[in-house]
Amino acid sequence: MLLTRRNLMQTALTLGAMHAFPGLTWAQARPLVFATFTGSWEEAHKAVLVPAFRKAADNANIVLDPMLSVDQIAKVNAAKSNPPIDVMLHDPGPALQAVAQDLVEPYPVEKSAYYRDLIPAAQVPTGPAPFFQVVGITYNPETVKTPPTSWADLWKPEFKGRVGITNLNSTLGTGFMVELAKMHGGSEANIDPAFKAIEALRPSLAAVAANPGQLATLFQQGQIDISPGNFNAIQILKARGVPVEFVIPKEGAIAFKTTIHIVKNSPNKELAFKLIEAALSPEVQATLMEEPYLIVPTNTKVAIKGELAKTLAKDHAEIAKKFVFQDWGKINEQRAAWIERFNREIRV
Amino acid sequence: MAATLRDVTTYDLKLAAPLAAGFVLFFVTPLAILLALSFQTDPQGGHYGLTQYVAFLGDSFSLGVLGSTLWLGVKVTVLTLLLGYPVAWLHQRSPGWARGLIMLLVLLPLLTSVVVRTFAWVVILGRQGIVNATLAWLGLIDTPLKLLYTEGGVVVALAQVQMPLMVLPIITALSRIDPNLADASSVLGAGHWRTFRKVILPLSLPGIVAGCLLTYAAAITAFITQSLIGGGQMLFMPMYIYQQASTLQNWPFAAAISIVFLVSVLLVVSIFNALGRLSRGYADA
Image 1 (cartoon, rainbow over the protein chains, first blue to last red):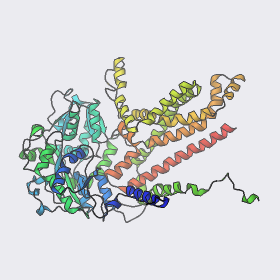
Image 2 (image 1 turned 90 degrees about the vertical axis):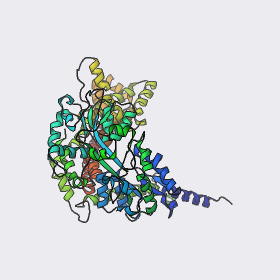
Image 3 (image 1 turned 180 degrees about the vertical axis):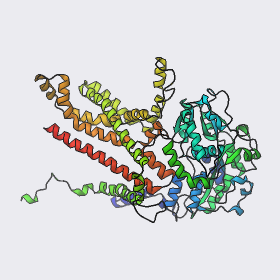
Image 4 (image 1 turned 90 degrees about the horizontal axis):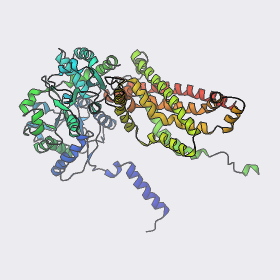
C-alpha cells in the first residue's frame, strides 16, 4: 500500500478522534463504569472489589472513575438518557439527592443473594450499603494523657485552643452538628442547640477546617490535639506514624452508610448488579476488613476481627448498639439553611 | 501597479480563526450558559428572573464576603509590590551572574505546584512551624502564636505564591529604561532617592500596573491557598461559589455569585487599566 498524504491524514484524524472521544470506540459494549471515591477508596476497590467482580462476571471489563458524590450526580444529571456512569457510590446526603432526582434504579432485592444478610440499616432498596464510615473522637495521645470518653470532653477547659472541627460542607461536619444538637435536647429538625454549643466551643477552637482532609494535616502539624474524625482517615494517619488515636465516645459513634447504586438507564445493568453483589459478598467484605483497609462490613455473615474488633465493636450486635445513624432525609431539608447560618455565625 | 503589491504590514485575520473558534467554544459558550443559569429563579429551573441577584445584592453578609475578597486582593497586591519591587530593582542593578541567580529564584516557585507551595506555608505558619519555633527559641514568646487560619497568614502566603507575577513585569519595565537617564539625573544634581522618585519610578509604572493587575486577579481567585491557609471560618468568594455549587447544588445562585464576582473584578481591572494608560502618558511625557 502506498502511503499517500491523504490516507495518512485520515488515519491520524481517526486516531485523534478516537483519543478525544473514547466513547466512539466503545460502540455498544462499553465497559462497566464504577464511580468510586478517590484516595484509599479507589485503592481498596481496585485491589479487592474489581478482581472479585471480574471473577464473578467472566472477566468483564470495568473502569474505575473516582470522583466526589456531587460530581457523580452532576455528570449523570447532564446525560440522563445515556449516563456515562453505571454504578454510583454515595454518602447519605447525596444518595438521597440522587434518588430524589430520579437518577437511581431500584436494587433488584429479590434477585440478590446477600441483601437479606445485611444489617437492617444497610438494607436500602434504592441501593444497599456495602460499607460504613464511622466518626468518633480523634486525639493526640502524646498531649492528651487521659483518653476522652464523651463528645462533651471537647468543651473541657484543658483543650482551650486545641480543638479542631470542620465546617458543614462535609458529611462529617454536618453529622457532628446533628450529634451536638441531639446531646443538647435538639434533633435533625431542631439544630439550634448545636449552634449554641459551637458558640460555647469558640474559645477552644484552634481551627475550623474547610474539609475533613485538612484535619489530618492539622494533627500532623500539632495545630490541634482533639477533633471529631473519620475512623478510616485516622488509620491512614496512624500508619504514617502520626500520633493519633481514635475512640468511640459513650454517646456512640456517628455512622454513615455509604450506599452503592445502579444508575437509571445504564446500558450495563446486569454487570452493575454483579459488581454490587460482589461488594456485598462476605468474601470481599472480609478482605476489606483486614489491614490496611479496615473497612467496616455490613454483611452479618462476616465475623468482626482484628483492629476493628479492638477499636470499634466485637460483633454486629454491638455495632447496632454503638453506631448512631442519622436521618439524612430530615437533614437534607434544612442543610442549606444550616450552612448559611454556620457561614454567618462561626465566621471570624 | 501599486494595487497588486502585497501589503506585508497587515495580517490575514483568518490566521486567528482557530484560536477564536477555541475561545468561542470553550470560553464564550460556557460563560453564556453561566449567565443564563444565573437568571433561573430556583435550582429546578423553569422560571427566569432576577431573584438570585436580588438575594445576593440585598444581603449584607454576601456583600461582606465580596468586599472582604476584594480587600484581601488589595492587601496582597500592596505587600507583593513592596516586597517585589526591591527584588526587581536588585536584579536590574546586579552583575550578569547574579541576575541569572535572582531570575532563577524568582522563577523557582513557578516550577512547583500551588498546592505544594501552599502546604509549605502550612508547615511554616503552624503551631510548631518555623516561625513559632524561631520566636520561641529567641525567647520572644511563651505560647505559640496563631498564624495559620488567620487573615494575616493568608495575605503573606498569597503574596509569596503570587510574587513572580509581580516581579517579572517590573523587571521587564526596569530593563527598558535607558541607564543614561539615571546618569543624566545625577549629573544634573539629583541624589539617588530623587533620581529614583522622579525618573525610575515613573518610568517603571507600566510594569507596576501590569504586575498589580496580575497579582490582584490571581490573589482573589486563589481557591486553594485561601482555603488551606484560611480554613473553614474565613469565607471568600471562590469558596462561597464552591459551597453553593458543589455542596448545596444551588447552581443558579452559584452562577449569579460568579457573575457578580466577575463584574466586580472587571471593574477593578478597568480601574487598573485606566491607571496604566495614565502612567504611560506620564512615562512618555
